[in-house]
Image (cartoon, rainbow, N blue to C red; front, side, top):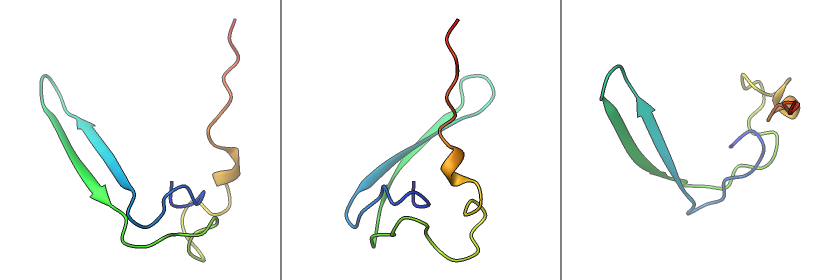
Length: 59
């Protein structure tokens, strides 16, 4: 979400993690600043973020 510029200062993001069995964890992050589309130079997703989300054909 930061790589596509979809998070602005003050936005809250809910992160949910599932483990094995009934283990589950969640937390809420608050953005401290707005990240412009493209994010930071040299980030891991910068060369391929435009391909996400992937369109899945429905049969």
